[in-house]
Length: 487
Ligand code: UN1
Image (tube, rainbow, N blue to C red; front, side, top):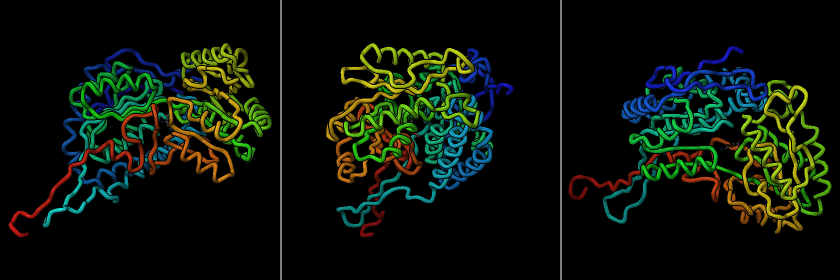
């Protein structure tokens, strides 16, 4: 594949970066360059923000139906290119081709959902305690929104931030992870080809300096971020200093709880998907498993057998079930996390190693890993590794299992496997998470319902569905009376 040239979309033009060289490689074969070019500089970020500010008034004044029509046209372009862009996604990010194509289609679905926003309710009306008066709550865009997105969903997460930002009348300056520039370029191309006016979306590819230049820019009115907890907290403190609202989706340490009465096959299948799809690189991935004593031996044995048999390989091969992690640095930190777990008493039931021979030795591969913990303090239980590593603990009963599920500073998602409706109701009450799956894996999000975490997994309003409106608009409460006495 000829490398894609990395350019930036600034004020409606595709321009070369004036910063450092940036190269994105195929994590399955790091010798293969997927894209290359130069990062944007801080001066280019300034130009992008100025363009977004300039475009704002006209875009905000455009009827929602018309803004939505641009998103609907972009959805068609994205759908039409799903196969080709899905393959590019797998090549630059490392998830399997099927997942890559699925993600591109998901971006189209998100564009369609927000493309139809004009048909939905735009505000509210309340009774007034005073005669001749009504109270309306209207919504307006924030202004210029900074969007910072991670590597692991290079088109779906941008879609679920940028589509609502635009449809509610904001303009955008977007910095994607520099490891996945191709899908960012494709998404921006789809929107411009669909008729988005110049300056409404600006794409600047760069490093953390670029991100900081966006957040603390005086003309930025809000920031939406998905990524690591450390970066999210740093940006949140900058946003707080600048006095702008921020929405942050950060870490997860999501538990699957398998109770004695669970259907074994369903639970094993779903825990496998939760732990190892996308090589475990989802903030919603299952990284902790809690299994009650009555089913623990049978379940763990079946799971370990599946994990050992998982086909790891080049994500563009149809037979592959799990690809590499994103970078060498990431592989090294995940392997170090496994070593620490073993030093802290974990038993390796599956995986636990990189590949040192054969075709996988070259790429950033790690075998699907299952570690059993004995209950003594272990970092792998509390800290996100963002890789194909599942830490297992046993619980005496459902009550202890729920307590262990809550034993985390994070609260993004959880999965519970049982056929007992009473236990399900109890889990809904007791497990502190933003997303709870009953008899399905811990990952996944639909465009029309809120997505986001409890506890320290997130800051600010949730994403997607009507929840997105809370972040991307502000309300004005209008006390409305007639202008003539008695009317
Ligand atoms: C999903 O579970 O399909 O960064 C989406 C992440 C999450 C998105 C998860 N914000 O992994």
